[in-house]
Image (cartoon, rainbow, N blue to C red; front, side, top):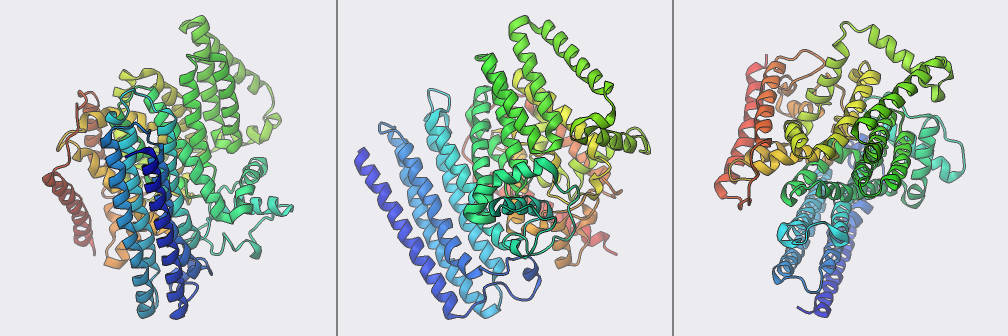
Length: 639
């Protein structure tokens, strides 16, 4: 197909998609008006969650937008393909366009929702299923095209990413993270911490001082308090700076505009992550799989859907890692840019200050290593660190900037009052890793591969691994020091304190992934991956179930258990409160960790074969047996 004919075909499909979306929007609006359906759900538990107005507008606009915007991205990706591309790549594009055309049939489910709402009196959950189901199908089509046409080894014989591939990654990530923003804006009020930043952005736009609490004028984003208050509300100059950054998109489109800015940051993060993995020499298959699983994991995906600094912090952390890798070519320029990125990271939030300092120290070490050698670099960095610590201790605590001295004294007091010296470490690790409500491995079990693959990554790619590992350990130590005693009372999404490091740990996933991309062996990857993806999808559909406290019952398990009249929380471990299944969970986690550790040192698979029907059946049976075992155990243990 010639370039002119291909362009005409793409434009025609875009126009037809736009026409179908506009027609569907008018039909949905007409049916909504004809049946006299309400502008918000009925007087049940939905009323406390959903926006008090705008439901009819959401139905008329959001579903058509979820259909057309991915079509627009698909057309742009097809145009990115060079004119002389091989015929098989062009065929992949045409196949994706056919699949995309079929998805417009799903807009008919919107009419079914309208009719069901008229009969049942409430169809908000069905509406969410239709919207997120359509967005998910569209995202899968785009991800498949991204792999086959831009990232697969056959599509990039010269290696590297290049501008076309990076643009394609950005577009796919942008639409994947953008579409849920409309649902969140309709389905759930902003959390207490988010409301502080949004209130500040509102005040910047209006040219007024920020109030202490959201008022009636802020009901566009804050209409219902969450079940509990977030501790450690962001205040002070850092919160005001971040609120000022959020002001332009807030002025353009309110909370939705800010959520779309978060999606742009995540799309840039996806570009940086893939470029970093490619520069580290990771093969395309494991790199794309690890990056996709890390970015769609519950902690990372939820961080992109909250008006908090986490999305910007994840992006800046990846920028720092790329600059560290770039130092071997441009030492001074990279070090200067690294200093700016570390400054921005420290400004975002106070708890990122140790991470920023650690990245800067690693950058100084790399610059000195290139100029003076390894031993001189170690000596100079150690002397500089010792001098900085000694100088800081010379000044009185009250003279430290930003009140850091007083804060340090408070944390030291709490540490000294701990029951044992290891109590803070145990509480912190158990709460952030294993806890059923707040832990990482239950909300995103795929990161167990990262933990198991760390030794192999350290052996095969020592420099990029150490660039992440050393600052990461410093950050975790500081987070444990300042937050262990407040962790049991913090109401937030899972593993929020770890989320700044999670996208980059895709590097650690790649050794076991490369070895397990074989028939049947890949079930050891996709069982935890599907569990994590299902958790992400469900809590995107029901976003108010994301927030929990360590030691409490997982909100999703609690909601399902109440429907089934079972205590499902008893069957999940708790790292804060003694649990009857904690030892069993630790044992299974240890066995899986040993398996992934051994797999990391195994030779990589040459070519991953197609999925077989019996493998897919085994995956479904394995997941079904796990769910059945959880429910059966809860039923047996019920009083």
